[in-house]
Length: 382
Ligand SMILES: [Zn+2]
Ligand SMILES: [Zn+2]
Ligand SMILES: [Zn+2]
Image (cartoon, rainbow, N blue to C red; front, side, top):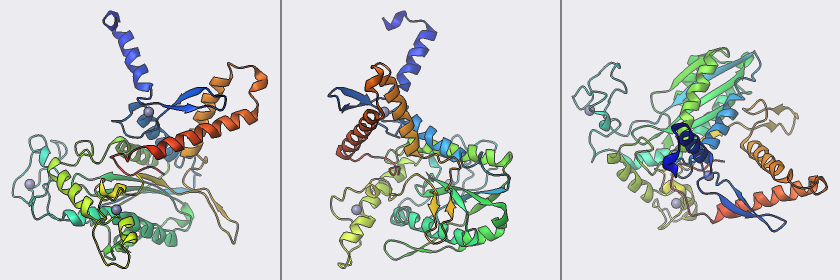
């Protein structure tokens, strides 16, 4: 019967299918009936529709910290990369890029050599253990960086998106907003970022790689460009790390990094073996860092609203409109409830019923999520 459809009907059908959750969850309602709700996955290969929602939600949160900003705000776009763990092939992204000689001695072509991008020149000598440990420790490094930046710019707010480089190391794109009165010169910011040192989970010193990039942006035009850039990085949210092709990491690296991450002690492995001086993974440790090339931190983080306990001074956090993932989910749940209850007589749609129903859906979803097997893919969202 589908063969009888016209091209436009077929397209409409495809669009409708794509908007539908691929693996909806059945939840029990307080009145004993069952209702289907979205799976909420951010991974595209699990559910295209929910993954689009998650990326869209985060993009809206990022935008709400830029376009609602007071005129006297200054923005910085910062890219923080990992240090070197050995030489990798340099292959230009586009044919127009200047072709420089790679350390392997060859001038690579963007099209014919794309499979070599990020692949270690010496596959056996490359530091895979160092890479996965750096991915694990980079969340500590970012915490340390954040507090150093706050000393320089106390009212700084940020939105950070973590992405994989082709060589399997995480890099961080951070959008920073500060009141113009606190804005530091670009070079000063770069100096702080280049000098930050943190202590990794196994006591080693960790720092950012040499390619610290800081751009200062003006709120009109430039900031919109930064938002476009960060939103583009958000597309990474929908990709699974364990699947090398999706994460943009070459297959030659994926297997070796996965093995190194399975043997590396994650923060939980280390805290359970404290005192025994071991630096190995606990056999069968189910924590995500072992499956995600060492990374266990969230893909996107934004600064949250805070109130100073002593002065009572409040800070808005990144979003200037108070937008959060929780608020977005609640708005969708409320919309779904309205759709459901408009079919019922008015007297049954009391506020209390709506509240209980909403809570019940929330509980069912949490229970369902807790029962799910661990997902392969990048770190879970907060
Ligand atoms: Zn879904
Ligand atoms: Zn090369
Ligand atoms: Zn572990």
